[in-house]
Length: 127
Image 1 (cartoon, rainbow, N blue to C red):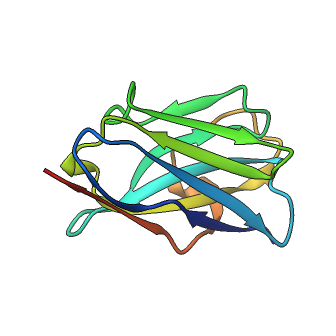
Image 2: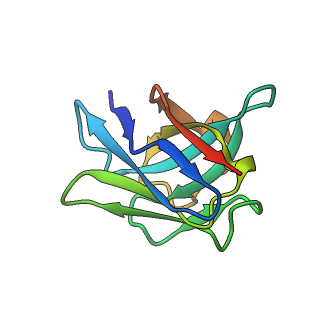
Image 3: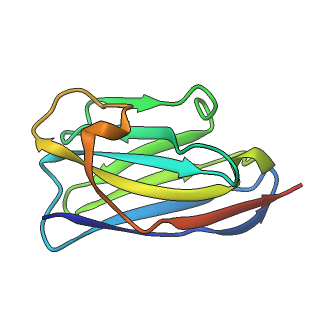
C-alpha cells in the first residue's frame, strides 16, 4: 500500500508562494494518479489538483487555476504543488491522495477515486 506523506506547509502572507511536497512511503506511486485536496475550517473537503501517473494529464479546481501548478518527479517518487499568489481563502489543511487504481489516464477530481490519504500539511495565509 502506498502511503503519501505531505510536507511544506506554513504561515505566509497574502501574495506569497509555497511549494507542497508529497512523498510515497512504502512503495512507489509512479504508477498512480496523485491528487491534492484541502479542508478549510467549517467547510467540506474540496479538490485542488491532480496529475496522472505519466504527468501528461492534470486537473485543477477553478479557484486555483492560474495560481497553482501540480507536477511530479518520478526519479524522486514525489509530487509537488506549487502555490503562487496565495490568498487568505487558500488557508486549509492540504492532503495528498493516491488513486485507487494504477495506470489511469484521467486526472480525477473525485475523492472517491483516491484510496490512500496522507495526514495533511497546514497552510495558513494571512491578509
